[in-house]
Image (cartoon, rainbow, N blue to C red; front, side):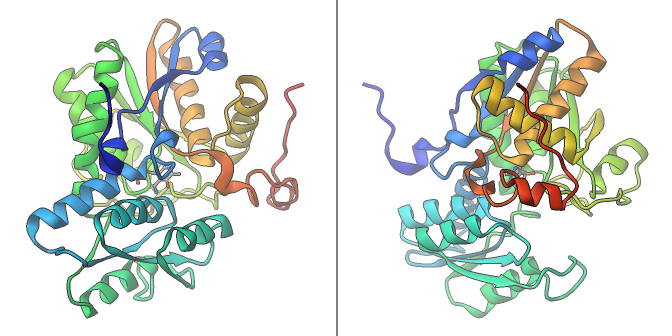
Amino acid sequence: MNILSGLAESIGNTPLIRIDSLSAETGCEILGKAEFMNPGGSVKDRAALWMVRDAERSGALQPGGTVVEGTAGNTGIGLVHVCNSRGYNTVIYMPDNQSDEKVNILRTLGAEVRVVPTVPYADDNNFQKQAGRYAETLDNAVWANQFDNVANRQAHMESTGPEIWAQTDGKLDAFTCAVGTGGTLAGVSRYLKTQSEDVQIWLTDPHGSALYNWVTTGEATMTPGPSITEGIGNSRITDNLADTVIDDAVQITDQAMVDMVYRMLEEDGWFFGSSTGINLCGAVEIARRLGPGHTIATILCDDGSKYMSRLFNPEFLSEKGLIRHSQS
Ligand code: PMP
């Protein structure tokens, strides 16, 4: 018998998949962790489960309580799944620059969604700060605080990292992914570096983010943007990302990401979202720098269905000056 018990046990233990076209082209093994196969459809299910469990263990969250979060989408989706399965309510604050698909799915799942004007983090009305303040006004409620709550990276230290190491039998030369909260990169880095200091950890950054400069120069200064990617890039070093061993970084343009997601669809049959496109471009760039014969793993964060009105909408792309090059 090999039966998983309910939703919590169904999060994680995702397949590690060779991306055939990219592996053949680079002479490296380009491997993607299939996080789109989690129950909520993204890598953020792991963070959601770990943050809720952490709040339960500390006693901050009691039966029937409420989890409040500021999120661009996937963490909210993961949280609603986890909260529904454990009898909690979910309230989600979201900036108004996110795709309608994400708002609709959150409401359908049962979250109370509050869409607020998009303002910088420094502004008191930033969606994350509003979420934190609202949680304080409720009894038996917690602010998940995914950016600075290190239960997020703990999820990847205890699950994603060990899974990748076991799935590759320790034959891994490099790991890379883009950073939103930093939970994935920081947690995977922490685990892999305990197994072998030789595994290189690379941050792959979109434009319009400060993290490429932070890794390569030590100064978290923004590069020109914006990027159409969602859920990745950051202007600050979160508590999750702080003190993480990162060997190097690459920066990927939106056009390269668009070319990658359409190539995956037309050539390999995969339907991926924008952060996965960035991650795969990063893995290919690292493969080029390391040369043939290396194994490079990355994260397949979510699928393309949430991005129908943007990444997979030709009018949106052309408004942004992006071109869909056909593979055929
Ligand atoms: N890809 C997608 C689609 C996401 O929603 C997120 C989370 N914001 C990330 C990547 C980045 O993951 P992390 O927060 O662990 O850095």
